[in-house]
Image 1 (cartoon, rainbow, N blue to C red):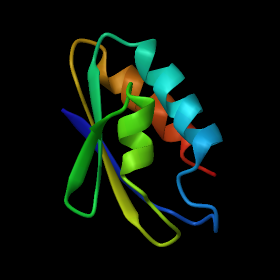
Image 2 (cartoon, rainbow, N blue to C red; image 1 turned 90 degrees about the vertical axis):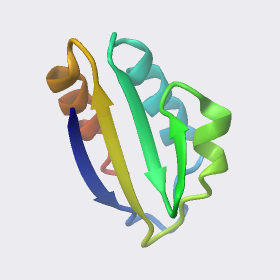
Image 3 (cartoon, one colour; image 1 turned 90 degrees about the horizontal axis):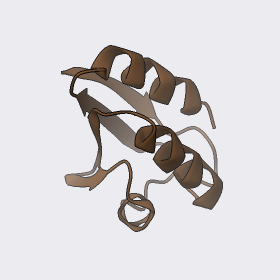
Length: 83
């Protein structure tokens, strides 16, 4: 399993545009990706679940990727988390 932690910097938090980008990227990979925030978790492919995390500025997100292409998938997802 590959994982990384990201602290939300943007004042808008995890809003529609980054959620759509994360879900689109996660769907490209065979590996499963999970985003965790404040005791809640969401499948990275699920737009509604990601929005339901209600991650705001300062919130710490943990992204876990597990599967046959986890290293490449984690690297690609990590590149999206600079919003």
